[in-house]
Picture 1 (cartoon, rainbow, N blue to C red):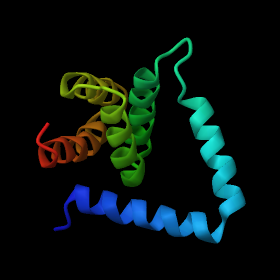
Picture 2: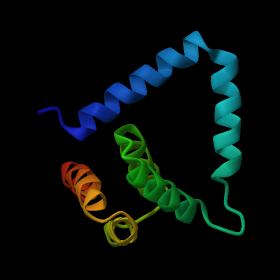
Picture 3: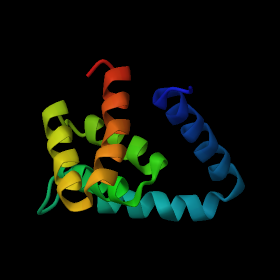
Length: 112
């Protein structure tokens, strides 16, 4: 079974290929993301935890991996990430549990 950290590396490599194939579109997306996730009324960390919850709810593995990594980079702790999973579980039921397991696996792989 491929680790989630390996999937993240593959995801990043494919995004780089997409940047080369569609540079203008990816530049616009990057500007949107940079603006969206800036500190404002909500901190960058809070926004990344919100995005993680949405990715969990959507069942998007790439989103779950990426937003977990972004949340960590923004300073989120394991406890904050686990609370994010708990909110998703409250809203999503057993599918929230299943998707949350991916985050736990990733955190364990990262030693967090």
